[in-house]
Image 1: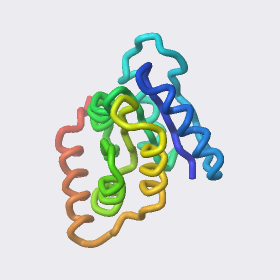
Image 2: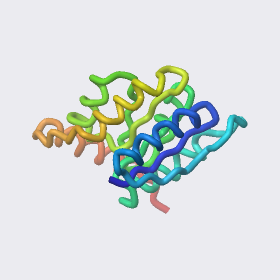
Image 3: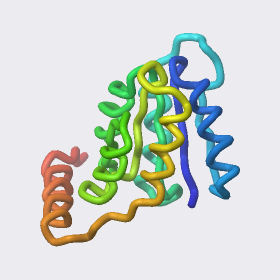
Length: 152
């Protein structure tokens, strides 16, 4: 699986742990930064990751900041992105089964690498249920995106 990953200054250390884990598991990883603790703006890192996923150039995306909240908000502005903020194993499974999330957000200041890697494993291994009620909800989300799409 090809995975795009990005982090801000508050998440780059966890990002490095995640990249090592993903590569060891055999995934193709594209790192969109950042690589230092200098203060930066998380939307600048969320956007290229989400563009990769929305365009189909990456299968999934992972975003990490201090809490995961900012990355989640920024990511969900990109049409086609269903980014879920996850800090526990149950939510990791549920967001794939029920919401078909294609981007995962986490907060380095909220969870440690052990839990983060367990979340990622579950999130990557869990398929979308494709049940009619969940598929209908995803369709409605797409309709919302279409309704509010900006047309030049």
